[in-house]
Length: 269
Image (cartoon, rainbow, N blue to C red; front, side, top):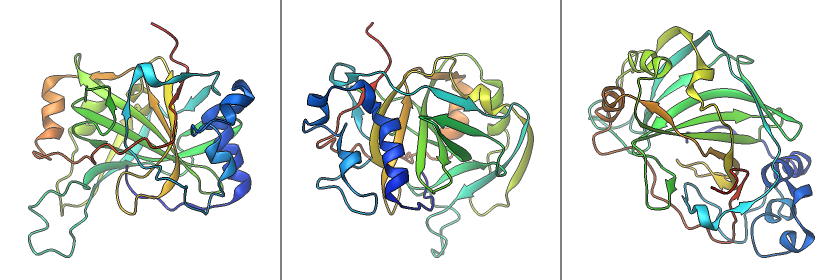
């Protein structure tokens, strides 16, 4: 996930912590345990955690905790104009235009107010979305060929990221239109109209949620992560179009989960 400016205050932290953990649904014993269900509610947003809360992580289905989580109310546009930009990390390097960095990506930016997500009574504006290959979050031992990150911020500057895995399957028309406009490094931005951003999400919005960080420098913590449990599909050709841009990948390695717990509303299967 790419860097965003994060504003910090305690009031919004408490809102975000309640949203991420569904605190009203957890027992007092769980809240008092060593898991991270209560940690965001007791650590000031401007202070570091006692142990690192870094992203991405490996998610074990059997190691998640069932909870009644606040529903996601998604308001993504179905006919948007986005700006496709290449995000560089080596602008000062003489060969930067030809070398692909593992923290570089292509990003689709939206105009302010074009899309939003509401969770736990807090509205987060959708600022941009981008891709990593292979996926940054792992589901047990499995990774996916692509992972999308939808980056949001609330009015106080707190960051929430919705992650979506992409697996091989049927052609995704919305994704295909975006991938027709993938911009190379050192090229100018490309404006793409008539994008159905809502079609980039799966139908079911059940999720894995945890407290984490940005996955690129400076790896800022206190980021709310919502990894949707259901992947979307893209054709093998569409997947290859993005992967050929980053032949060695552009993901961060998984990080230690430390004292955190991953909550889910997925339900037993």
